[in-house]
Length: 155
Image 1 (cartoon, one colour):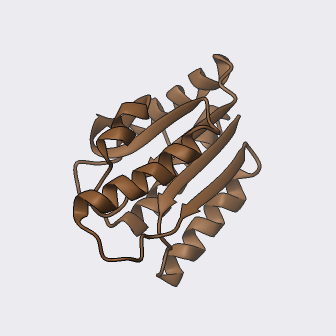
Image 2 (image 1 turned 30 degrees about the vertical axis):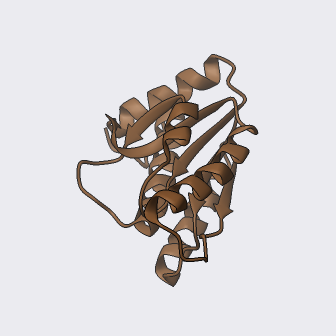
Image 3 (image 1 turned 90 degrees about the vertical axis):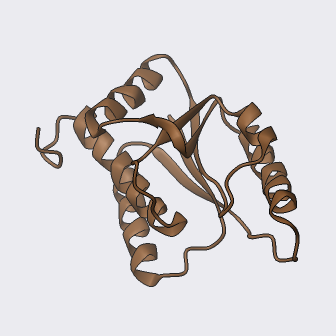
């Protein structure tokens, strides 16, 4: 299965860049994983306009994937084991391409919510968008080690 993590903007902090890079490297062993980085909107616009412009760019990317899951504070929370089970189930159902999405600073436009297949929450806590990139890539790697019964995740 091809999996992508789509996000808005650059990861500025070098320690986060290095962490994401490490988990991307580890994930290559299990799946075709890619990051799709959509540039920030650089012009001054209202919050609603920014969400609309980002939303159009996100929706263009959605066309490349069978299933799209938004990372969203109002989404369904998972344990690491449940998340691994969901990934394994999607693979067994024959889903060939899956995208997880981290929205911009102001969230998603209505059109993005209308296009998605599912919402998922990483935590009830709030993290910076840049930190979520690292947390998610680690959790996806963890999911694959659980699926493959490897000792990374101690059950």
